Length: 72
Image 1: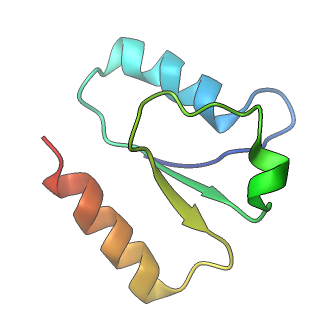
Image 2: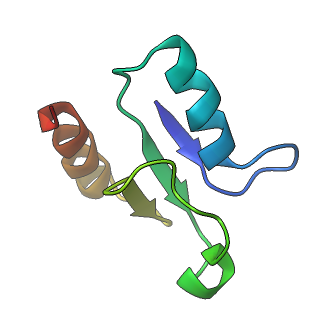
């Protein structure tokens, strides 16, 4: 799953927690155009979460998807 970190109704972290209740093994890639300072307080749902910074290039997306798929 690919989701933005900051969204209007719930954060991407919250979405990931809800989805993982239904699909525990689902691999999730987070994306954001915000700086690290803005993301402070938006705690990732799991250590080592994959965060893809915007603007996203095709190459960076492929690398992130491969990294997500390779995780156990």
